[in-house]
Image 1: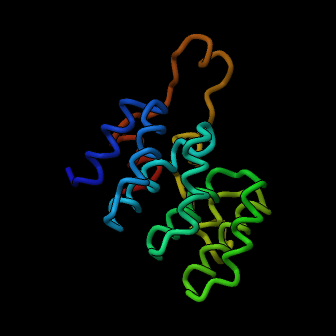
Image 2: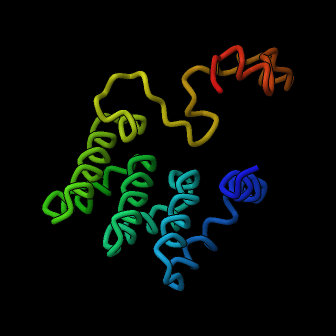
Length: 166
């Protein structure tokens, strides 16, 4: 298992409870990679936790392009229209990659489709699955399945094979 996968697995176990700790650590991190990872790992919580959302806003002003990229991604995923003014400020940023990231995040917010942050040509063929509910290939269980807790869907590697994902 790669270190990134391990980190994701640990964070998934703790769920939303880690959001304030990730945000609090950001101000103490001097390494660019650490700040970028803190924002990156906050993305899954950006819709539910205000700490994560505020971390994305804070990251827009970071001196590192990598950190600003992750901040734009977080705000695109958060889908909070109030982030638009902060992202619009980046449209005048001297770094062209940062401007492109800001445009992509604004498009994601304007369309209400976070997938467009990754699918910058809007092909609708690229999906950014941060949380399970983001996967358009997985059907929601019907009411009976939700009530009984029984979902008749392939699991694990079989599910991935059926959905042709590797």
